[in-house]
Amino acid sequence: MMDGEEARQERRRAATWVPGAIIVGAGPSGLAAAACLAARGVPATVLEMADSLASTWRHRTYDRLTLHLPKRFCELPLLPFPEAYPSYPSKDQFVAYMESYAAASGVAPRFGARVEVAAFDAAAGAWVVRLAGGELLMARWLVVATGENAVPRKPELFSGGAARFGGPVVHTYEYKSGEEFAGKKVLVVGCGNSGMEVSLDLCRHGAKPSMVVRNTVHVLPREMFGLSTFGIAMALLKVFSVQVVDRILLTAARLTLGDTGKLGLRRPKTGPIELKNLTGRTPVLDVGTLGHIKTGKIKVVGAVKEVTPRGVRFADGKEEQFDAIILATGYRSNVPSWLKDGGDVFTSEGMPKIAFPNGWRGKNGLYTVGFSQRGLLGASSDALNIARDIHCQWKDMSRPANSDALQSDNTV
Ligand SMILES: Cc1cc2nc3c(=O)[nH]c(=O)nc-3n(C[C@H](O)[C@H](O)[C@H](O)COP(=O)(O)OP(=O)(O)OC[C@H]3O[C@@H](n4cnc5c(N)ncnc54)[C@H](O)[C@@H]3O)c2cc1C
Image (cartoon, rainbow, N blue to C red; front, side, top):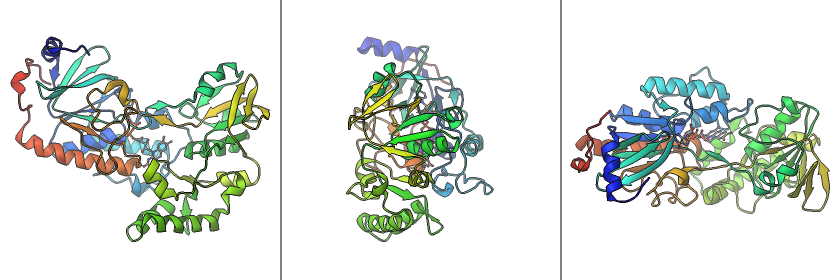
């Protein structure tokens, strides 16, 4: 957006004032924030660049995906999952839940609305949002809900060097199923939950995956003694310190999974929950991948040094041929590309500056939901806090304090 007072005045004149909050993103986080606001009688305009809600789940995930955590830890405020759903709902079930969630809360996002810039106009005491196409909207509160997984991370080695590789190079956001890789040798780069699950899926479709493990990784069983590991950890944390809980989890993991180091999956020195709290690195919850590593159906390989026309050269100098490369290398936030004036809450990478549970509120009516690296549980907590906070202000004020500064009569 143009700078300078004259330009700002022009923007105010051209902008359409929307009551309540503007929420950017109609994934689970944006919908949760909108639903919690609606429950308190605060209106919100939800802007979504895709053509449907929960587009990340609908369009950018593999067919076999189920929730990683049991449903009771993934439901959004105000509406539980249907009882008939299994403990780990499929991606289609999760999308259906999102659809009914929006319908039940009366939340109707505006689709095809990509926010290109959002900036705070101090004179107006409001946020000005410019959509692709040039339309300007203005609101007292701005809720950032564009997600931690907005932009696929593609390491330079594979995005640049891959031009030399003759086969397909696919990021997990494009990967649907192992069917098209049947009988092929596939290099899976990354050993987080996605890398592990894609390797397993490839195996089940008759492909021959090799999984690159560069760093240490904590693998835990998804369930222990018939209970979810996540649930056990949450319960233990109410009583014991993080370090004690980590020791309990690692002992149980060793009993159920054996020594993962022997499979090439060395554990970090710091325990899984402490590491998550310190760095955001999520432990992998094993859904059967380790069994396939043990039987040799999935090969664990070391760091890649170079991409070659027919495969890769590893750090130890050995070269190996592959038919395809799948990048399970994660995602990053897109916030820095469109949000101005968010420096008090977001780092230059578009991640929160303030640790959970306090990173949801910034200055000047700016809020963030779903950036705490704590999945849907974290998003729910943010959404409830945001709705409570905005509602307190809404009660006294449904126009900005100095709305006279707004020279626009446009209101939707
Ligand atoms: C494979 C996978 C499995 C996961 N499983 C679990 C799980 O089991 N349990 C759990 O708690 N968490 C899980 N997570 C983590 C997290 O809960 C999900 O990623 C969840 O979708 C995050 O919701 P969100 O609304 O914050 O982001 P998203 O779902 O990514 O939604 C963000 C929305 O913002 C839109 N958007 C982005 N930029 C703009 C813009 N400039 N203008 C307008 N719209 C924009 C996008 O199109 C998107 O629809 C998983 C994540 C992944 C990747």
